[in-house]
Length: 438
Image (cartoon, rainbow, N blue to C red; front, side, top):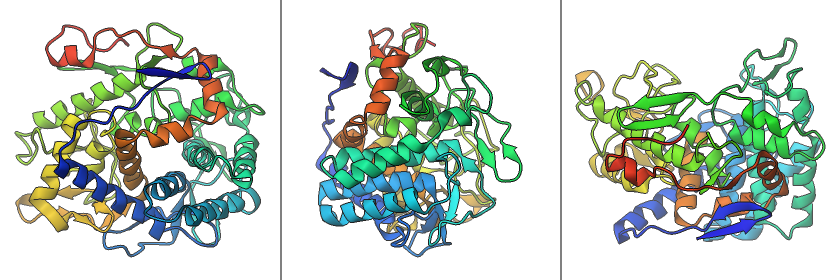
């Protein structure tokens, strides 16, 4: 079933037929994930900590604006489920939006990646980040969509969004946005010129009524094609690049104006299946990997924060597992992702599943000895798990976010329309000769 919103097709949500135990696991994991954002929200700024300990204690006073975007969305989820009173969530949203509008440092509307949670001052020598600001804006607009009758939230959300100068972030290019800028040294050389999580950044930029960029920018970035076994899809990196934009933008049953490009939602489904098969192929090296024990995406590791995953392989992969890889793809492929979470929790229990759900990463058999468990959870990883679960079960985040006129306008200008099914995921799984169109 399809419904249309301002010319943009939006698929109605169908709740899968889960068992009682599956629903209990998802409900528990969702509420624990929400609690991270409730516990680590700063009452003076409304910013959310970048990370915290599994047991609930903070690990630093560094906030992340991307985590704050997930956190604003989490407040809506928590209020909707009755985990907190809606008025309490509303007041927290207002605290955050007031700080962002009147006190937080910004450059042409763009924010530092990391801030001091108490003061908003720059931390970790961080950049003024285009993608992290975009994820923050996603949370701002979701809160506006959820608290739709609150005039102050609407005004602040509109002001914060429309202040962002997307044209400035082009830094002289006609179409391709920069990763950001650093005080004293200027724009970062890297640009968002390949498929990535930045699809949400481009839609926000194209939809901006005051500082928008051309609709042609959507087609200016490359879409590298990956072939892995029977799978064919576009990709620009680890599994999270297929998840983050989809946490808010409802791409289901739609494709853009170029007939050679993919159905982006189905592309992420295929990427999830390909990643599962890729992990299974590593079972000869890592015996714990298997059909119900897989998942590698950017995460903590025994040697720090690591960009790893596949296909194609990025690493070096050492046998560590990252629960949010499967959790973040629940909205795409619950039939293969939920068994992973079920098995992880069954095998390792409280070693890896504590106050905020799963740890960020663990190794079942580190150096042939005991299990290694990261003692931290990371805000954006907790966030993608939470939003993916909520979209799977209710479609709420998609519905609230897609109420904003900016992304709807951008998708119309880009040429999004109801997609005509080609080779479907079901056909590929059953052995069809072609993969997704790319």
